[in-house]
Length: 265
Image (cartoon, rainbow, N blue to C red; front, side, top):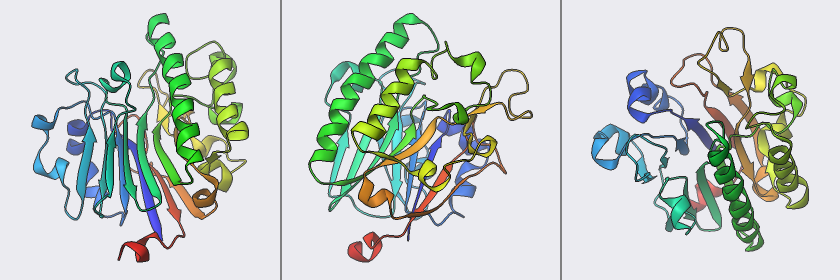
């Protein structure tokens, strides 16, 4: 069994203070994909870099206190890929890929466009560039699991107040069509939705800090594990951890029935 967790921490130091690393040690996970580190390498403690039993790999943003992604793994990767190879995107620390044989595990943090028109244009540009990258990644025959905060709720069932958000970043028609194209035309699989096709309120992974979004469960599903069909079909169980709050996001946990562990020894 292969367990993979995706968690937007909204600041790794803040999440640590809220008990994230104590929780992590209880999960028996093989990979923990992190987004929104909001820290530089020099600001991380040893526990944050290499939690007990894990090795951490990171792609930090150049801007302090901003963005950044990482992956904790129990296994030594064959290859580490930091960034998409596009400088003006990579300075924001949004992509890291670890390769193990024919399997790639990715931590992704797609931009939000909610702060204004300029950032929404940047988001659309990143989406276009990333779709090209995803096409190449899939065409080379690798099994790939992309974990992260995609900052898009795909369908009406993926957020509580869908009627009121049709003109807002994260639920724009263009963003939703992009997700549909990714899944239906390019052949990627939304693993959580494969396992839970009809789940509504329990599917949310993010809640605004404004108002009483958390207490009223006015949430969005914007954290995904998107995978190539071969590995996606091996997913057997998924859950969203809400008992404790480490961030404004909740961790997405998925178990895959695969021989990867025995292959790695």
